[in-house]
Length: 246
Image (cartoon, rainbow, N blue to C red; front, side, top):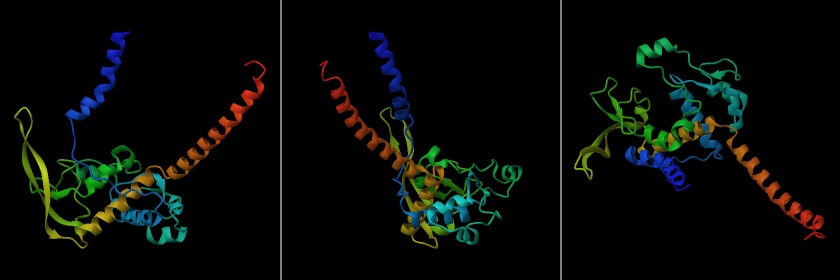
């Protein structure tokens, strides 16, 4: 029994040890608020204007954005550039062959990217691009080193360079870690405005990964409240039925 307990303890500790040994970059907290419909609407606009040119969202239909408070006409007039009917899936016109030839790999579908990567990762990633002449695209990223994707939002954020510092671990091994950014060419908006725009985009990507998330949580609370009330009723019924035995 003691050996079994030790084995189970080691098994549970493996993910923690792996995480500690492969610590990634420091992630910033994403301002996700799925109850903020205006933020979600702005994020949807960012998505169709800057992301949907290369990345599809094959599990999402344009019509689903009516859940964000948009009318069908608003979706048609402002958010549909690659489809004719609101019921169509959010796909791109670029073929996989062309995408692979132009970018080296097919851009991934973003339907559930917030669920796979995490909102904090996306928020930090979209703000972590910097100029790197050694890369074919001219860009690199502090979160995704040697990323193949160019910085499509550079006209908004501007151009920044990354400064790194040398860090020495307990074994005396030197590594270069990110220190800070330096903005060398301003974009069309301030950095604070850019962060807010990226926050709206990440908010929308989080919603798109599970549009029914708020309803699911509300239903869960209703179920828990019902079970709590039913527990009290069941408890007193049990006392009534068993009062002659106990």
